[in-house]
Image (tube, rainbow, N blue to C red; front, side):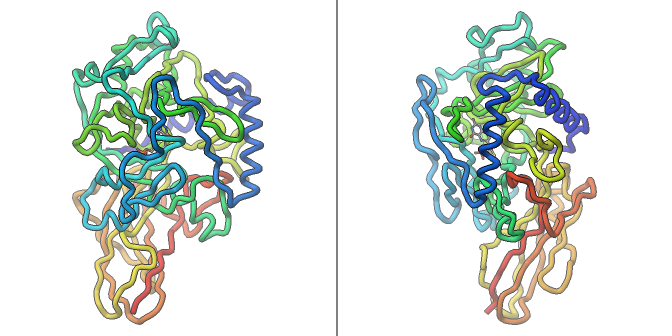
Length: 427
Ligand code: MTE
């Protein structure tokens, strides 16, 4: 289950940002100047706001078949394709339980789902934060069977893309942002099973000097704005890595599906989805701060009111969604049971209100979900007259954060938290 992240995590990020701006960056791949250039490219993209982030695939790592962008069938009633990604349709959750079944769980791929051989797969830990400071080419290795022999844990955790809801910056606020135009379906909760990252780090010889851990995916390098940014990777502070982070090899009781990181992925509860690196292979454990384009250039809050170098983007925003088709048809005078879910990276949901056209009223919360990473709720509604109606849901989390009518915009369209206006037609 997710929990309220300790406050030191925001402080950690602000400190890393200052270090990066001061030129203390250490992270394989792209140097600070290169990233600043990329920043200019992203700014240009923002100006041409309707554009999507260009996606190009460089050569796959040796021995990796680049495969197809997404391996599982994209049933149109369950998933909506978006470039190399697919979002869950909220109607596909109607009548489902707490977790999102694997066949409809959203997929966010920077490039493609790689085909990895589980027998040859190795987790490779190296770096100055491990005893003897093993080098990248002489790492401490764990095979899948090694991980399976270690004590297993289960965690019901929510995964969400930081750009989830981005479309509403355009559609509701007329403030378009570049990037994948997610509705609200870039989110899901699953039961993950695996071994705690902390257990593996300690076995690998973690020292008291370690400050950051950077998992890298084995999917093809990510190329954007004419630059090869290397493998998808994002550092985690050691405090989070030793807390509730899992190296997961099962999802909802099945071996991890190919699109969700087979054979092993990182699951970082409460943090934005990019932290949960899929198809993890190499993992640097460092006694000095680590950086990557995914915590300096992307997945930061840029724009008016944000600090130089961008604002922190670790914990997810608060949102609500109806398990109902967009423009659903309902019958005048006939009661419907409206269902939905609300969630927040800052902690469990405390309260949900719904407006069906005559003011806010409390929704009934499913008692069994209290304290969990998302909260199911219901409201009864009898459409009083034919025509277009707008349904709205707004949540409050345990920290007191309430969804605003309008989300504060940022250049890359992250962390939408505004109340979504969901149209229905009564006839
Ligand atoms: N890990 C790798 N290696 N490559 C990726 O493209 N996408 C990230 C993260 N981990 C990504 C990755 C992002 S942005 C998100 S939101 C989640 O994976 C999505 O996980 P899912 O596809 O299992 O839903």
